[in-house]
Image 1 (tube, rainbow, N blue to C red):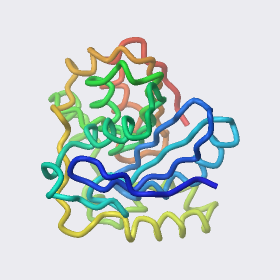
Image 2: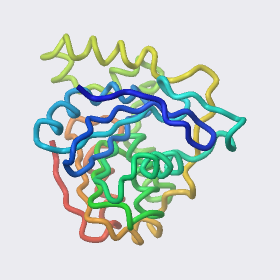
Image 3: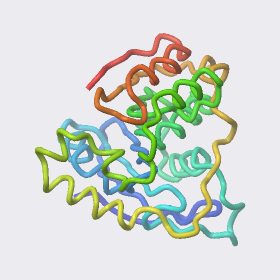
Image 4: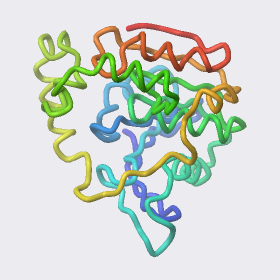
Length: 234
């Protein structure tokens, strides 16, 4: 069974899950909805495939506890990730980020390429600030969508229709995900086309064809700036 514990890092006691073992490490970054618990099916599948799987609650989410006595607030998630990788003695690892976790994964790949074996970003706008991306977001935005309950935005209709248990579990996790009044952690620098162009890590970008917030057309707008990025649609 995976171990769960808190790592005392600068500015935070970071809650993480680690399946251990000698397999290649894979680190999973959760979305702005949910926590490390959202990854349960992937942790299980990747663990069975022989990987060492690590997931953590980002600062301000789940069971991680910000600690102003030990470091600056709110800090950067990529900084927390780097500190955790050092804490766990991960020399190199595969990094997977979905949605808001994808913002951080791109940020980390641009700053610490020497630590990554590969980068996977799924279902994410990339938080790319260039006007071209912002214009596409403005054109595809469904009026009132962000005011609806999160699972209408974030869980595909086929999944909601076909997997009531999974949807119920997703809602349970999301209900306790974001800590009230926790400040958002900014990126270490804004994600831009120019920044993405510096990423040297082997990259796979995965789009979900029913995604209302980051459809394939939007993801292609930024993904083409990542050199030689491979592309998949689910």
